[in-house]
Length: 362
Image (tube, rainbow, N blue to C red; front, side, top):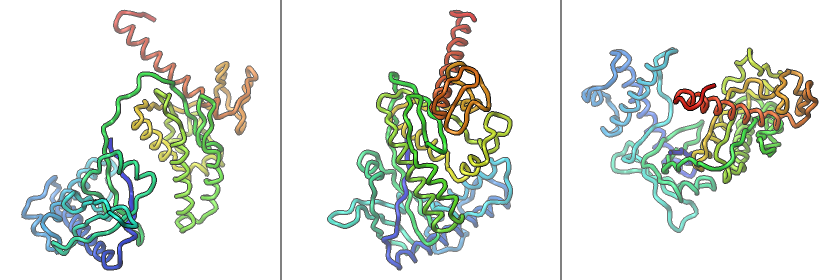
């Protein structure tokens, strides 16, 4: 398994930043030059003569690196059914170990040196970087993959490093829990545990900021940090599997149960559900926990006790069954339904396997 972490290059001095700009500009020109050749001739690979034909201060090795990135972009674009315009590259520079090396710093106020080859051959620049609590675990317990990605966001430069580690085997023993996601509470589990009760406040804070402003970006970072922190608070020690709703297309879903209130839809647009989904999935992978998803239809409208389904069963944070009178926290009720739905699906699969093997007949 692999993880990619971002590190600021903000400790670089003015001359080194200028060197990064010059490198980035020339590299992007090379990638776009190669993309033009690939698109104009509608081919998959570039000849060596075409690589050498690009007149630049880039070294031949850098041109080769730009060529590989151009071919990868072109291949991805050709696979896309909704192609649109020919791509123009303005992203991160994907560089291998020949161009980027990371070394641990000794007796210093920072943690690592990153050595980056620039346009001036034989004179790489050294930029100090500081680690952070989350990254320290990766430096200590994972293997650092040589190379990295060099990116620029506004006037800030970052280095993206990849770490790898052998994937642990999946657990065979332990509990299976369902998790419901909400805007009042980030997560509610089928064990009646609630996590992330400040998520609504953070989403409201984002809504009050002007989109694209510095305050808006700070609010987004605060929310993302909170989502990561909350996901890590979920104990996986005694768990064999986690089941969540696959609500990737929740805003486009108009036919199923999720005809959401206007308030929910508005807030959901500013809430990166994929971040929580991805974070839980990653934590499960690291800890050998199975990760499953189900269709979200009816989970919040179904009574966990009697199975009665009605859109008025749920009123805000309270679930009150109009058939049997069962009342409970609405998110907890939904999490129980998520788990029950998954277990029912697994039971059906097991039954079909037995029937096909001639052992059991429905």
